[in-house]
Image 1 (cartoon, rainbow, N blue to C red):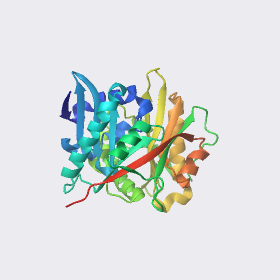
Image 2: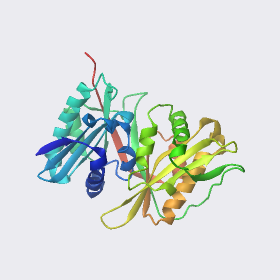
Image 3: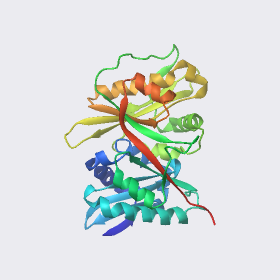
Length: 305
């Protein structure tokens, strides 16, 4: 078996293809174009490909913006390669700790029923974050089918719902995204690169503009075609500026993207959210999303000597 670092410009499509072939095993599939555009892959030390002959059988990325490891394994090679990936993560996480790409802790997301993965993670020193007290953390993957929306939410007069204008509007979008999530992780390079991936559709990249011309909410939709030629959608990301949340503009943007996905003929729409039964969870429930799978989060700390 041979390995090589990821060159995202050359490798993104075969990575997505491998993920789609084993979509039942992986947390991130439909929204991979969004994640594969992140600045973590500005350094090829953060990603690795594994080949059996000329066939790609696995890949892994240290996703610095998310503090998490994205990975995909061909099911035929699961038993041997997951442990190899964990060994690679240990080595890379330790070597990057003092670099801009380093993090003191890294997280794996696995489905609750993936017992072999859970056992392997625990044996390698990862610990579930589900029941650790005040900071307990788990996620859910939610899904709704292709029935029409019950309510079409419209913005208040003067607010405009439209696709992102183009690259010239990226700085405004980045500023809004950073404000919404309280983080500087979103960068212009990430947002620009995302728009060049074949799976990106500009009409699913929705923003809400205020009467004074500011971007105040956003929602992006993604589409994947499965092995049965059925289309599936996903929402990632969704956000609204804190000063405008009382106007329900995030709900307006979500409604617009979902309606566009349904018009494209998707069989289902998915979204991930924290399993807190909080505002976001209730929002998706109100759009007829239901929990499809429970997601456990496993953490391992990498300390500086």
